[in-house]
Image 1 (spheres, rainbow, N blue to C red):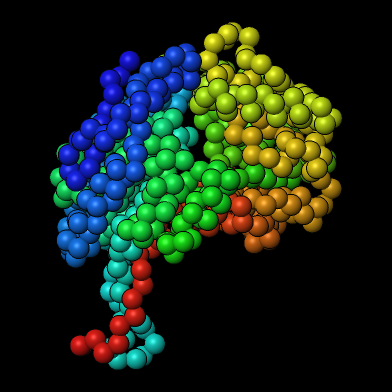
Image 2: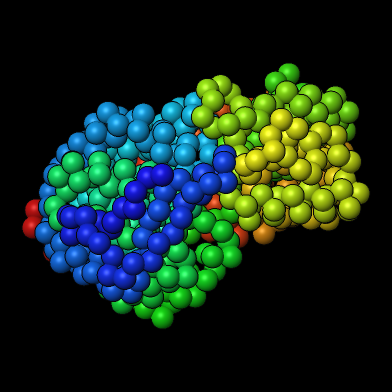
Length: 478
């Protein structure tokens, strides 16, 4: 078991004010793998005070200085890639190949894109309306509280910490208590990179403790949160009293519209995307809507793909999926699978219980339901497990209506060989992102949604802008 780690405040590792231990559970074995301390109000106050003291100097630093710091972080992050992958595999059950490639790689990708965006960022620029001396300045919001989830640890930490550093903010990070080990390692990386004391601080804790303390703290100017819609609502209410800026990246219930003219790999690609990271992705395409002439074949491909999806230990190399993060998540998924059966969905692959070869660990059978109805719970609730729901549609308008009939609006997907149709659907679908025919988002493109998915825009230039206030200046000397 990994020994207990302290907090990082004002450029140093410090012991908590009050000892409150929390066991981190390895989801593959259901056994403790590490112990962390949970912070209390005194720890949160100390971290915020350190960030507040460091703010004037860091906010005033030349952007080139801040960019150089992030370039050092990128170099050290790359050098410690295997340690980072091992940490994420242990804490949240990511198969080691996925941890090396996607989990670690997401952080490297975002850091590189932020560096590129920062070098071209218009920190101070003319208003551009022909008014002499009218300028716009982008300045750091101030001290920010960053609250990150367990499912893609470095993806979310880098999407918040790196643009905050580049914008000139100082910060307190509260990572998920379910997956804190990668954030503690990331803190070592930032420490080695030589950030000034107080620019970055870390306090472990839970949502009711440190999370709530950051959300209500009078010296925090902004909260950036990724997690459940329920928690996002609570944070918004808590932050309202101190008029904080709040940016939320929340859940999703993505629809994948598969037309009869889609490419041969479209259905299998959608199933694999749904199951990636054991289904624990807010942008997973969990509702597959298939044009009726292609429906029966699509269901058969989905069944075959699910049955070919291997479930195994995260320690093993290979392209399998691992466990879900904890017991409560496992039990929630099992309950929703049972509910899908009870409400009349046709179970074509998987189902309740663990895979046959695994009797311990929070492993879920890759599950596919067909003949689903838009009113079913599995078509409306975010399951956050390897569970796909399929239904047919008869027209483009019907597909749009069903896809948009959700309070969520993060990512929707389109599979079609008709370019004009794809373009129509890209505009008609209500979501912050639309991905079509397996194309990835562009480097530095913003990640975020609408409605119950929150309205954050993380990544690239938009990610830096979220941590900036815009100042209008008149009478600037030419």
